[in-house]
Image (tube, rainbow, N blue to C red):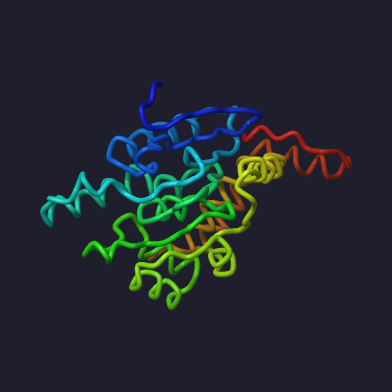
Length: 260
């Protein structure tokens, strides 16, 4: 599968997607969103891949926003369609992927870039990262989940301030607010992220996928998260991973999970 705007590498069970539009500060356009969808779909289907990392090329930007030139002249209907397609193809798609997706945020993560990072299951930032949702300074609001996921992560009041001021926060501020899990030096970002991925890969892929589903259920309107947890807890009992995990525990050895 050939891509123009992203790079894909895989090593030791980790699939890495690098958004590769450095001259545009890795801004998201329609083509890049489609390529990200296709790459994520491919990595999810690959049994050898256990964890996915998304990052940006270079040291300046993770993703510095959406490509404004693509939609500056859109009508009301076209704008709504743009957002709906983006949710379906990428942002909701990432959030609901059964394999863990980690955002390695290097540099600017603004607008659609921060929305992509927030759609990932968690985030690790470089010490030079800057994050924000500046859409209201353009006369629009975030359209790829920013108004929903940011309050979930940092609380309503902080999210309101970030959105209304259109300001940026530093990686340390993002850490204190709970927007990112860790802040590390730029040069150590990918190695640190891969280290966490390696810890994840020691555990059952099937159970992790079910945990993602159960956690996400708590944030979906009309869905009972406790019922989703109970249902997915039960499903784990019918898997090879459950038999292997419990047997290995009783035999005092390390389990060898297959994800089945």
